[in-house]
Image 1 (cartoon, rainbow, N blue to C red):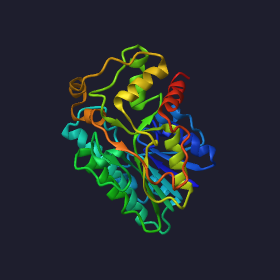
Image 2 (cartoon, rainbow, N blue to C red):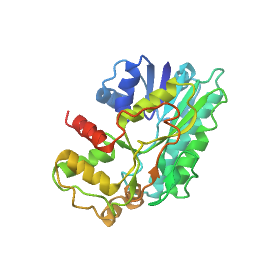
Image 3 (cartoon, rainbow, N blue to C red):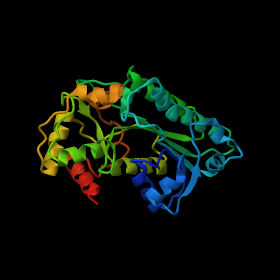
Length: 313
C-alpha cells in the first residue's frame, strides 16, 4: 500500500517505519524537522514531507502534504505532543489538544475533498479515554472519563470519526508503550540499573501496557485487514499495578526495586502531567482475540526482558 504517516517519527515510529517497509509498503512520512529525523531513523526508502500538520496552511491543495494524501491508500495518524513530559500550563494544554485534534480535523477535511479518499485510517487515541480508577476495569465498550485526558481523547476520536464514509476507521487506544530507547520505560531504566528504582506514588495504580513491537504489529494488521474497524484497545492482556511493574523490572535487571518515588516529587516536576503515572486504569481488550490478533509479548516479564535487551544495543 501507499501509506501516509503522521506523528510516526518518535518512539513508535522508530520500529513502525522499518516494519512497514519490510512488508513492502511505500511510505510518505510527515515531520516538522525531516532532515534531523531522516538522519536518526536512517530510512532511505521513505519520502519525507516537512510541514506541521496541525497548521491548516500545510493542507493547501497545491502543497506536498495534500498531494501525498491524494496518492495514499492508507493513513496512520499518531500525531500529538507528549502528554507527561512537562507541566500542564494553559499553553501546553493548548498544544496537547491542537497537535491531536487540529491535525486530525485538517486530515479528515482534506480526505473528504478527495475524489478517492484513502481506504483506511488508523488513528491513535489513548487509554486515558476511560479516566482513572483503582478498582474499575475498562474494555472498548466502556464509557469515557470526564477528566482532562478523557475529554482530550474523546475529542480526538470524534474528529477522526468525521472521515469519509468510504474510509475504514480503526481507532487504537494505546496504553503505556514499553521500549528501552524512550518513553516511560526508557526514563526508568537508568534509575533502576543504578539500584535506585521503585514504584511511583502509591504503587497501587494500574498500568495498562503494550510492548512496542506488538503495537506496531497491531497497527500493521489494522491497515492490512479489512475486517478491522472501530475501536481497539492497544494493551497487552494482563495489566499490572505500578508496584508489580517496578518489582518485575527490578527482577529483570537483577537490581533492587524498593525505593518508591513519592507522588509530591513528581507533582513538583510535572504538575498535573504527573497524573499520567500517579493515576491509572485497568484496561483490557474484548476485541483483539476475536479479531485473531496474537501478542508476541503477552507477559510483562518477557516484554521487559525484550525491551531492556534492545536498550543495550
